[in-house]
Amino acid sequence: SAVISQKPSRDICQRGTSLTIQCQVDSQVTMMFWYRQQPGQSLTLIATANQGSEATYESGFVIDKFPISRPNLTFSTLTVSNMSPEDSSIYLCSLPGGVGGNEQFFGPGTRLTVL
Amino acid sequence: QKEVEQNSGPLSVPEGAIASLNCTYSDRGSQSFFWYRQYSGKSPELIMFIYSNGDKEDGRFTAQLNKASQYVSLLIRDSQPSDSATYLCAVNNPHSGAGSYQLTFGKGTKLSVIP
Image (cartoon, rainbow over all chains, first blue to last red; front, side, top):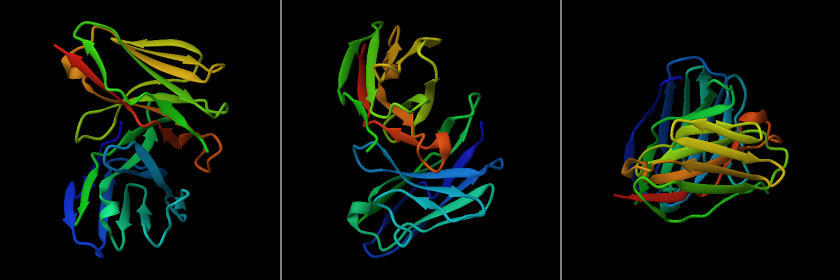
């Protein structure tokens, strides 16, 4: 399976600022996903990012708050804008793959704390 | 609203016993079912996937799927303390724009294996 890396691994940010999270893959993939995992909760899909098109956002998530870039087939960024303490979460990118073709693999995550 | 339900636990089993983790899902159109293991502070790791009714075995893990009952389970035989983690059930959302790749996660079951 592909190797997925994320930067930063963790950060502590001030309310009202923005943070851009990077996701790098060692192979070309058409589709990437961004998830959020709030403390003690499961994973919630933020958006699907396809290279060459606008990201598709899930209900409750908007582009102004979570702009996504997908400049090529190995890289994506998620920005968390105008942060509040409620944005404190782990943010994960993932991509499909595997033997069955439908499996999904996650990056190591970015642990964000907003003060 | 697509839902995936899991007992949050914690589920405690003695070392060497069988741990049984259960999951129900609401969308009859779902075709792909996954179990992820998540250690504290780490990202989810795919441990099993199943697409057809019945049992699928991989080492100490067995996934069971019953589409008629909309039920999927994970059995862990000869449980070890290293199996202590949160286990997330995930189901594909066939109605999403991302095709079969988009996943809905349950809240997870915390498993504790007591030495």
